[in-house]
Length: 180
View 1 (tube, rainbow, N blue to C red):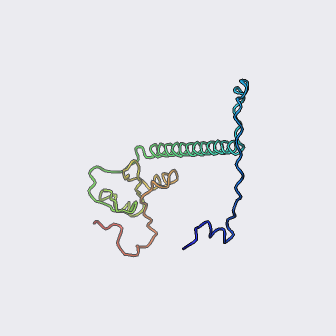
View 2 (spheres, rainbow, N blue to C red):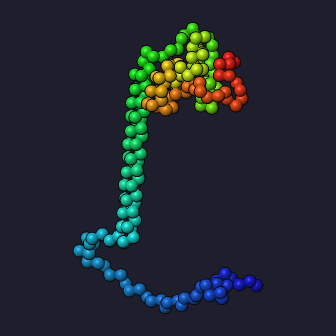
């Protein structure tokens, strides 16, 4: 028959036998004097105090981290609002979009092919680098290239299309003025 786990541990030396202590008859409980009932509460052990301090320190550190993250987010939002306001002031009255434009000019933006409608006169200027496309408020706006460069200085993400006439044709040899 197999040995018990206890016996196996004893044989391997991983456990030892403890001699049982002789049983004593407990003395009859004495009633404490009435003044003893009003004694101070039992003191906590040192480990409980250290644990409470550790939790308090961790809570204050987490609170400070949340406050710092919130302040940074508010600062970024404030800066973004200021940039948007500067762009709105810059582009006010300088947008060249024409309501009756009927020629679509396609361009890549945000991993998709987008389009803006231009007139027959604006298309060669856009492809030649005199005009550019900026995005603001979810719309694509046609502006002069100098205005677009100033907008890029305020926020680099708003400049969507600015053709460089000095650059050779792209690798696929598709002309930029091709109407799809």
